[in-house]
Length: 297
Image (cartoon, rainbow, N blue to C red; front, side, top):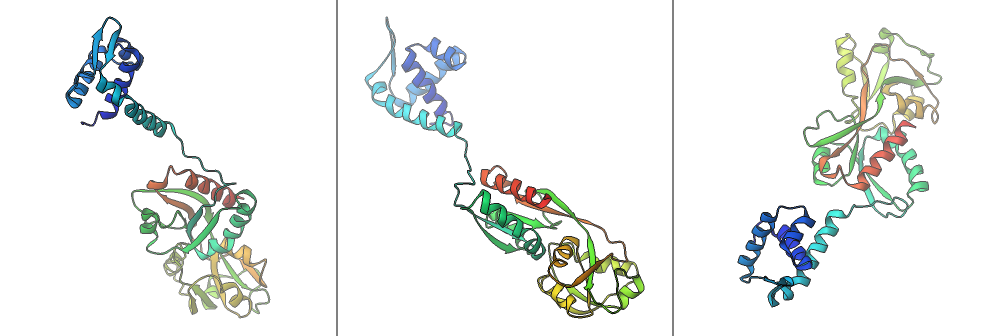
């Protein structure tokens, strides 16, 4: 049949129920000629007149009687699909979500997220992946549900939500022999630096801005992540320029001091990213709301 199959079945069922083309049209909110044309199409398809005009109304033929239950089953199933709304109950869900994030978010945001889940969604599990150049593809393929970080390269087909503004801060050992709560640009350039080779944080912008101010950092060690940066700084005379939230968390765990970067660095928006395919998924929606709430807290 043509693409109007389902509408034709609805009309068939209503004529069968009312025994009237006129009443079927009124009940369905259709013009009578529309119902008459639909009946003609049904007759052509089934090779049977289906309904015969009698003194009692449009009586079904044996063939119409034979197929009415199947047609009712089809229209009922379609109606159920159209009216159903997917439901996500975090208290009962056993779903596993895969989230791509930077190691900074892993240190600062993930513990808060896990504590929230323990109380509000104890059956939910999370699988954490590192943000990489493949993150956009993984989002569109559904391999990951959400990505958290600084991802300016995402193109059409993605949604995003700002979580917080990220600034930069310097950290040095608490007993650093030459630093006590502040530093000027000249001393900043002369100190030995720890640098993190990290994507997804906007950290790659730091050196470009420094160079524009005529400052070239003396980098003595490059780390693959932020995970060991604070410990190295705490036990050496090296300094590091890091995202402010990371620095504040590390200051509660390591013997370090925090101080202002002596050069004006632009802030960046740390955002939540997801693909349009999963924009209306109830579980994904709940996870986005929850992460936004945790990040703001």
